[in-house]
Image 1 (cartoon, one colour):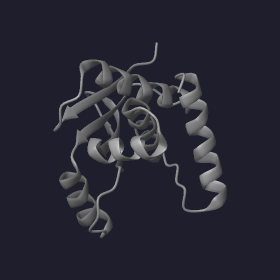
Image 2 (image 1 turned 180 degrees about the vertical axis):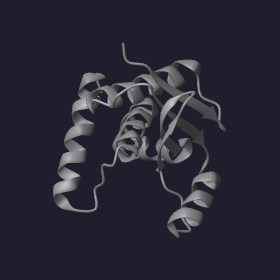
Image 3 (image 1 turned 60 degrees about the vertical axis):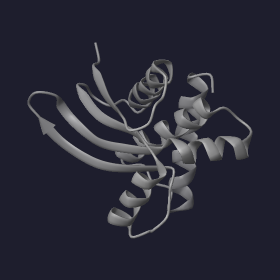
Image 4 (image 1 turned 45 degrees about the vertical axis):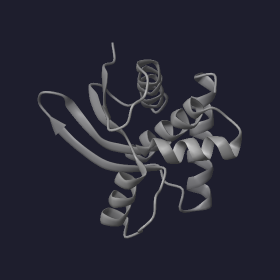
Length: 146
Protein backbone atom coordinates (compact mmCIF):
# COMPACT_ATOMS: atom_id res chain seq x y z
CA UNK A 1 0.00 0.00 0.00
CA UNK A 2 1.32 3.42 -0.94
CA UNK A 3 1.95 5.88 1.84
CA UNK A 4 2.16 9.60 1.33
CA UNK A 5 2.42 12.33 3.95
CA UNK A 6 1.21 15.87 3.35
CA UNK A 7 2.30 18.15 6.18
CA UNK A 8 -0.12 21.09 6.11
CA UNK A 9 1.08 24.22 7.88
CA UNK A 10 -1.34 27.08 8.43
CA UNK A 11 -0.39 30.73 8.72
CA UNK A 12 -4.00 31.65 7.95
CA UNK A 13 -7.20 30.09 9.16
CA UNK A 14 -8.95 27.51 7.00
CA UNK A 15 -11.39 24.84 8.04
CA UNK A 16 -10.28 21.30 8.74
CA UNK A 17 -12.49 20.24 5.81
CA UNK A 18 -10.47 22.48 3.43
CA UNK A 19 -7.24 21.14 4.89
CA UNK A 20 -8.39 17.53 4.29
CA UNK A 21 -9.49 18.31 0.71
CA UNK A 22 -6.09 19.80 -0.09
CA UNK A 23 -4.33 16.78 1.38
CA UNK A 24 -6.54 14.59 -0.82
CA UNK A 25 -5.69 16.72 -3.87
CA UNK A 26 -1.96 16.40 -3.18
CA UNK A 27 -2.15 12.62 -2.70
CA UNK A 28 -4.30 12.23 -5.83
CA UNK A 29 -1.62 14.09 -7.80
CA UNK A 30 1.13 11.87 -6.42
CA UNK A 31 -0.89 8.76 -7.32
CA UNK A 32 -1.71 10.12 -10.79
CA UNK A 33 1.99 10.68 -11.41
CA UNK A 34 2.90 7.17 -10.12
CA UNK A 35 5.18 8.47 -7.37
CA UNK A 36 6.76 5.72 -5.32
CA UNK A 37 6.02 5.77 -1.63
CA UNK A 38 6.82 6.65 1.01
CA UNK A 39 6.96 10.30 0.01
CA UNK A 40 6.35 13.51 1.94
CA UNK A 41 5.70 17.13 1.07
CA UNK A 42 4.83 20.28 2.99
CA UNK A 43 1.92 22.53 2.05
CA UNK A 44 1.97 26.01 3.59
CA UNK A 45 -1.25 28.05 3.45
CA UNK A 46 -0.26 31.62 4.12
CA UNK A 47 -0.88 35.26 3.19
CA UNK A 48 0.13 37.71 0.47
CA UNK A 49 3.04 39.15 2.48
CA UNK A 50 4.67 35.73 2.88
CA UNK A 51 4.26 34.83 -0.81
CA UNK A 52 5.58 38.22 -1.86
CA UNK A 53 8.65 37.78 0.38
CA UNK A 54 9.29 34.27 -0.93
CA UNK A 55 8.79 35.39 -4.53
CA UNK A 56 11.30 38.22 -3.99
CA UNK A 57 13.85 36.04 -2.21
CA UNK A 58 13.76 33.05 -4.54
CA UNK A 59 12.60 34.38 -7.92
CA UNK A 60 13.55 38.05 -7.78
CA UNK A 61 9.97 39.26 -8.30
CA UNK A 62 8.70 41.82 -5.80
CA UNK A 63 5.05 40.90 -6.23
CA UNK A 64 2.43 38.62 -4.77
CA UNK A 65 1.92 35.31 -6.52
CA UNK A 66 -0.55 32.50 -5.92
CA UNK A 67 1.67 29.45 -5.47
CA UNK A 68 5.37 28.68 -5.22
CA UNK A 69 7.00 25.26 -5.18
CA UNK A 70 10.41 24.44 -3.79
CA UNK A 71 11.57 21.07 -5.07
CA UNK A 72 13.79 19.03 -2.76
CA UNK A 73 14.07 15.36 -3.72
CA UNK A 74 16.08 14.22 -0.69
CA UNK A 75 15.87 10.63 0.50
CA UNK A 76 15.50 10.68 4.27
CA UNK A 77 15.59 7.44 6.26
CA UNK A 78 12.71 8.36 8.56
CA UNK A 79 10.27 9.59 5.86
CA UNK A 80 11.51 8.32 2.51
CA UNK A 81 11.48 10.80 -0.36
CA UNK A 82 11.02 14.43 0.68
CA UNK A 83 9.53 16.07 -2.40
CA UNK A 84 9.68 19.66 -1.14
CA UNK A 85 7.51 22.58 -0.09
CA UNK A 86 4.52 24.34 -1.62
CA UNK A 87 3.38 27.78 -0.42
CA UNK A 88 -0.04 29.18 -1.36
CA UNK A 89 -1.42 32.65 -0.68
CA UNK A 90 -5.01 32.04 0.38
CA UNK A 91 -5.86 35.72 -0.19
CA UNK A 92 -4.55 35.58 -3.78
CA UNK A 93 -6.41 32.31 -4.30
CA UNK A 94 -9.60 34.02 -3.11
CA UNK A 95 -9.12 36.90 -5.57
CA UNK A 96 -8.53 34.45 -8.41
CA UNK A 97 -11.57 32.38 -7.44
CA UNK A 98 -13.70 35.54 -7.42
CA UNK A 99 -12.36 36.56 -10.85
CA UNK A 100 -13.02 33.10 -12.30
CA UNK A 101 -16.41 32.74 -10.65
CA UNK A 102 -15.72 29.61 -8.64
CA UNK A 103 -15.25 28.62 -5.01
CA UNK A 104 -12.10 29.25 -3.01
CA UNK A 105 -11.81 25.50 -2.36
CA UNK A 106 -11.70 24.81 -6.10
CA UNK A 107 -8.93 27.37 -6.58
CA UNK A 108 -6.96 25.99 -3.63
CA UNK A 109 -7.27 22.47 -5.06
CA UNK A 110 -6.03 23.68 -8.45
CA UNK A 111 -3.07 25.47 -6.86
CA UNK A 112 -2.24 22.41 -4.74
CA UNK A 113 -2.27 20.10 -7.77
CA UNK A 114 -0.22 22.67 -9.72
CA UNK A 115 2.31 22.95 -6.91
CA UNK A 116 2.70 19.18 -6.55
CA UNK A 117 3.25 18.83 -10.30
CA UNK A 118 6.04 21.42 -10.06
CA UNK A 119 7.62 19.41 -7.21
CA UNK A 120 7.59 16.43 -9.56
CA UNK A 121 9.47 18.32 -12.27
CA UNK A 122 6.64 19.65 -14.42
CA UNK A 123 6.98 23.13 -15.84
CA UNK A 124 5.03 25.43 -18.14
CA UNK A 125 7.75 27.64 -19.62
CA UNK A 126 7.52 25.99 -23.06
CA UNK A 127 4.27 25.25 -24.94
CA UNK A 128 4.76 21.46 -25.01
CA UNK A 129 5.63 21.39 -21.28
CA UNK A 130 2.61 23.56 -20.52
CA UNK A 131 0.31 21.28 -22.51
CA UNK A 132 1.52 18.21 -20.58
CA UNK A 133 1.24 19.96 -17.21
CA UNK A 134 -2.22 21.39 -17.92
CA UNK A 135 -3.42 17.96 -19.12
CA UNK A 136 -2.18 16.32 -15.92
CA UNK A 137 -3.86 19.06 -13.82
CA UNK A 138 -7.15 18.56 -15.63
CA UNK A 139 -7.00 14.78 -15.19
CA UNK A 140 -6.35 15.03 -11.45
CA UNK A 141 -8.98 17.74 -10.93
CA UNK A 142 -11.49 15.68 -12.90
CA UNK A 143 -10.78 12.68 -10.67
CA UNK A 144 -11.45 14.94 -7.69
CA UNK A 145 -14.75 16.11 -9.20
CA UNK A 146 -13.46 19.65 -9.81
